Image (cartoon, rainbow, N blue to C red):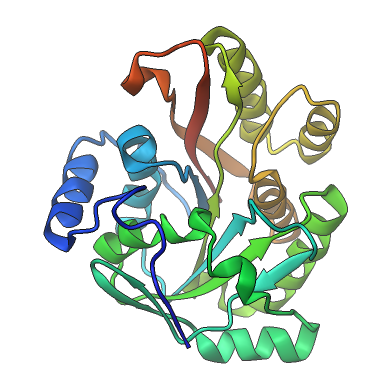
Length: 272
């Protein structure tokens, strides 16, 4: 079971050499805020690299100096919402940089112990998880991934997944990092987008789960991967990670020059 790339050549370069150079250039341009403490995970955007790649580089450069064996990637399903969450049932993911191994033993255990299902029809066409992989291949080529798509973006679903993952990984949390895939507000003017996104960023920095849930339900903030954000914040509460940092924020207008309809991006992390 091999998962082939579906957005290579569109969201990011289809040529491996060009892709590697682009990612290394992004990483080289990052002036990283020093994080002192044990890292739980990061949040990174998933748009086309020309728009969000530089922002994503902040999260992946944060991961570069960490020691870990597994990466749990939680990404939203943009086309299917007929499931709560789905774990990718593959042996490898392919990108122009080569293959990414799945932690098949962990996938099997999660399916057996917690009844996690696989909906490969959703995984096969979803870009939000795929675009994280080339960055991971550059900064941590040896790690194995646990690929999870969220179909239902609700607070209840996020809490359910958080409890499963916190319980399962608590004894190997030092070997595991989480990558949450999300963009922020979509297609507002830059002024409105910054107002909405700033509110989300402030709630994330305070690890205010209740506030994040409330503002999302009232549509005062937006994130296509809100379920993943809430899952990470809930895991942090369960495992006593109490610090967060926003590493970068920008929107698509900073690249396109069109500030009338922008998409917001941020990179961030949770640690203790």
